[in-house]
Every structure is written in structure tokens, then in C-alpha cells.
Length: 149
Image (cartoon, rainbow, N blue to C red; front, top):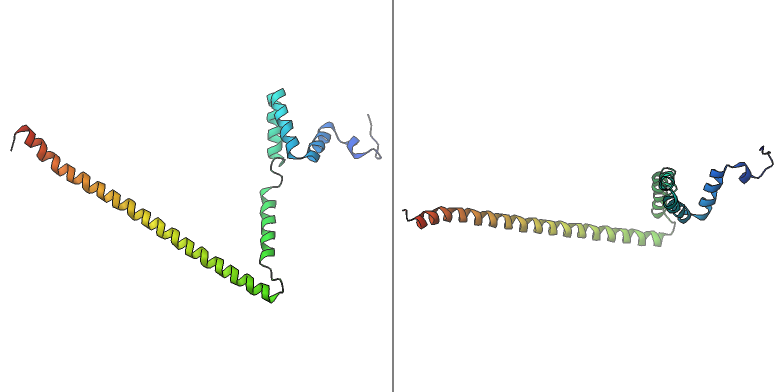
């Protein structure tokens, strides 16, 4: 069968590309349903669909690079000056307050870690002292029980 240049794009695509376009139009749920159906019908088909979804970036939508770029783009908007001096002053005060709160919280966490470390070290030293005193008492008790002095 020969196709002409005026044939619709869907007719020029092979069955695989048409199926891929059909699933893409319906979203991730359709891809997952097709994968599950593939596993039910014949497990290698489901496995092949899973591999295609993962390596073809079907499962996760965007690549990691695109996500990082989008996030950096959004953060860039947050720190760009708006031109409103009152808002800029408010934003600067709020950011300063948040930085101070973060520093206070981090110092609080450090004090908690230090207290926990001290408690664990003190418990270790008590156990060590208890074991040392138990070893000092044990030889004398064993000789006393045998009647030897």
C-alpha cells in the first residue's frame, strides 16, 4: 500500500506510532493501564511497555534536567525586584526574619544534638564504671566463696 503526500498524518504513521499517540493523548493512566493489561495477557509485553515507559520518559513526564530548569526559573522570579519600594522593603524584612528564625532553629537543633551526645556519653561512662567496679568485686567474691584468703 502506497501513501500519498496528501494523506493525513495518522495514516502515514505505523500502528506503533498511532498507538503511542493514542496513549499519549489519554495520559499516564492509559500507559499504566496498557502496561498492566500487557502483564495480564503476556508478561513480556507488560515488561516491554514498562521499559519503554521508563527509558522513553513516558512514566515521569519531564526529564530531571527540565525539572531543574523549571525550578530555577521559578526561583529567579522570586528574587527579581518588583519596582515597588514598599513591597521590596516588606520582602527584605520578611526574608531577614526568616533567616533569623532559621539560624535560631539550627542552633536549637545543635543544642539538642549536643545534649543527646552528652547524655549518651554519660550513660556510656556510667556503664563502663559499673563494669569496672563489678570486675573489681568479682575476684574477691570468688575467692571468699572457696574459703581461700
